[in-house]
View (spheres, rainbow, N blue to C red):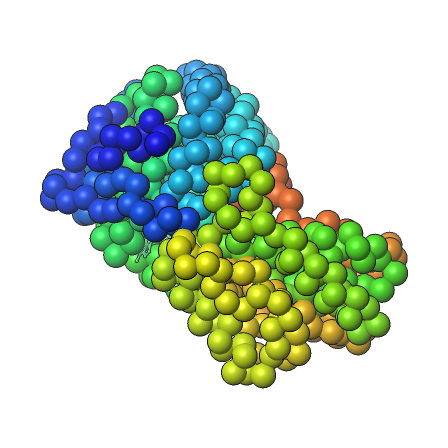
Length: 484
Ligand code: NAD
């Protein structure tokens, strides 16, 4: 058993201290591969969120807010070093709590977390305003000031990575943070909080309050002394957050869902395209906001694409996430497994055909076999709604316009992929596709230097890069009269 879970009871992190919830309540967190309880976690509610916000406010007004920007950068670098030192423990913990294969966390999540910390550590002392010569009788310039206390609410599909996408830029800007991890995956956020204390972050700079959405999450949204909420999760909760934030007109960034199209044109490298398309939908058991869940194949190569994709599904190794050879783990929970199996049933009832998969895998753990649907109509629910599981729909298209119509034909606009050997076509497609990111001849890579997010039901605003610096700062104009 992992060092961190061995203790079983895990308290909140408020004001640099591990403390039980004010209510004294704990909730269970499970290993999705065995369904067994791995730890009990203190359940924060409004009283704990309030204590965390007070502490975060004090750190913002004092220690952290007054620190030299370069020293904030150094603190982030120290945290990166501690994450690197404890990376095997973090890998195992993330895998235990989320069911992700250790191989995937080692290859993707952990390096991204360290990269994010180093990238934003570099920003800390480079956040500047502009001298703007508006008049000859004044010196006019802008400065960028930190927004204040940030509430970060994150989902369970990439707890470490998405958590760091929010924490690192907020802290680099001089904000302080109250982080609420998803109730299904609270453990690595607490471990990061502990590492931050060890790295010398002043008490209150980063508080971690695991708990449920309706209580702890809502308390963050409603709290009058939180200046900004940064949220990643479902569109339904995103809408609630936007409404709730109206109270004190909090700033809000929302990274929501997707139903992304991966379009394969004839003449492209179909073998490579389908390999990437398989990874695009089966990676992280399909629990990826930008999963390429709709594979659009030109009619002339449709059969080949289906055949190859079925082969990719057959090649997935489902099993113990701690086994290095496992390529696909379980879904996060019983509820999520039932939801995905429910969608598979809906697809069958709508008249689509299961080419492979379509059922639970085994009888222990929340495993669902990689599933490929053919005979799918664009209007079917399985082609329109986010399933968030290892379920691909393959749909034929006639020509470029048809591909664009299908690709843009959902309420989402997060990402899209295009496979083509025609350079002019690739430019036409990137122009026409409504998406926050369009990948050409690849599918799925992200980088913290590049803006991430979408439009419509995929969200509001962008994260990453310099945009995240804008997300956590406010411009202030200074006007100094130099007239006589
Ligand atoms: P969710 O919306 O149910 O939960 C996300 C977080 O919000 C959790 O911490 C939850 O406790 C909290 N929450 C729930 N109700 C709340 C409320 N009323 N007020 C405040 N907080 C509340 O989403 P999920 O099921 O955890 O994650 C899956 C969703 O996240 C999918 O739709 C997926 O596409 C999306 N997602 C998007 C991105 C992206 O970058 N765009 C990345 C990962 C996941």
